[in-house]
Length: 248
Image 1 (spheres, rainbow, N blue to C red):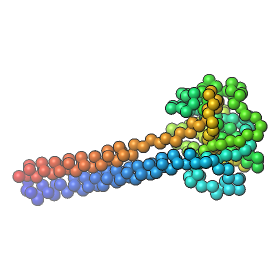
Image 2 (spheres, rainbow, N blue to C red; image 1 turned 45 degrees about the vertical axis):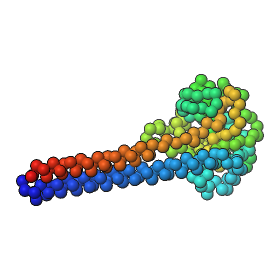
Image 3 (cartoon, rainbow, N blue to C red; image 1 turned 90 degrees about the vertical axis):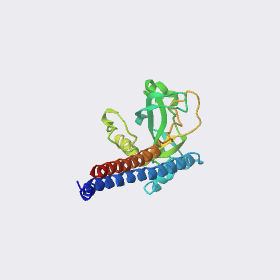
Image 4 (cartoon, rainbow, N blue to C red; image 1 turned 45 degrees about the horizontal axis):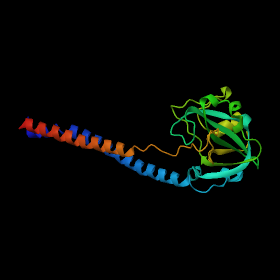
């Protein structure tokens, strides 16, 4: 085999290696960008949850409310709970701020505002054995009350979450529009509130359990992709060196 033939034999592997290298570098760079985005998100959310609570915007402003710009900000409103329309969504609570944890449910209850609007309020967590509202009557506040909570956008559907089945009373995803339709509630807000307030021992539902921590593995992913890119360069260099050595 001549040297020229050996070099020609490196063209296709070289092109394929360059293509693969470009993909690996692009994936690593994308993870770096995701890392910066996640760090900014964590900083933003951490700051928002500690802001002073503001009055909930009126119904007339709900349609134009920027949910992304206001998510996790605390708001307060006055009204009454519609306990007859309570929804429970299965969850597993780890690292609780209150007394209860493990398997249980988020308790979502429509909250009728003084102006007639409806906001779905995630009142907090209850353990599995206390799913039935009759087992926790002391937590079913009656009459006009003030609620403070963190604004939350609807929970997005994904391949791993089964669809809600309102007819059977089975719920897997927090979707205020779907809950409102199930109970024929008019003027429902396109967002929810996660209850925030003073915690009392053994209070149910257990408030202040909004998850404001986010998995951040992007640096590790970026290093993995860049490491594979370096490995690819090393493998191709060794292959080319061996190919040319054999020719000599």
